Each structure stands twice: as C-alpha cells, then as structure tokens.
Amino acid sequence: MAVELTLLSRRYCHLCHDMEVALAPLTAEFGIAVKVVDVDSDQFLAAEYDELVPVLLHGRNQLCHYFLDEPKTREYLAGIR
Image 1: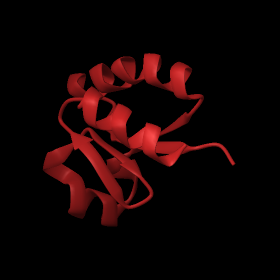
Image 2: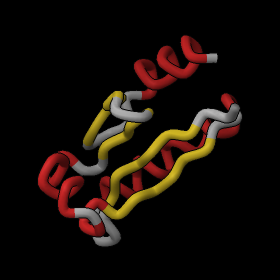
Image 3: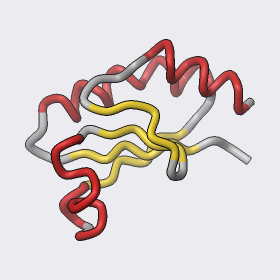
Image 4: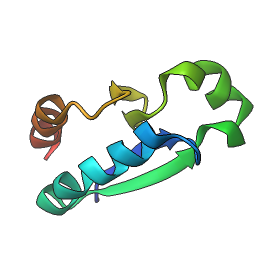
C-alpha cells in the first residue's frame, strides 16, 4: 500500500505553496503521494490547525508545520518503508 501524506493548506498561503514545492523531491524519492486539503473546507480541521498551516500529516501524526522539516520527514518516511 502506498504511503499518502496530507498537507493541510490554504489557497492564499505562500508558506503552504512553499511546503508543497519542497515536498516534491521527497515524493519522488520515496514514491509517496501527497493529498492537499484546504483546512478551511472542514470546521474540525480549521479549529484544530488554523494558525499552524501548512501542516504535514501522516494519518494523525503531525510531521511538521509552517516549514518542511526535511530531515525529520525523511527519517520518518525511511522508518515506515
């Protein structure tokens, strides 16, 4: 089963766009998918993550927010292979 990460984002958020771009090399290297979800489309997500976006999740595991923590994300992905 392929690994899918979730990127909680906003359309008008430059940090969100930056994290999505920064994830591209990791998605290619690890063969993972990234589902981008607009945090404002869901009241629960907006209440929980409002000021933290962008937020990178694997299930309920929060990998990082604001900026991609590449070493931490790389280590996490290597560990779930």
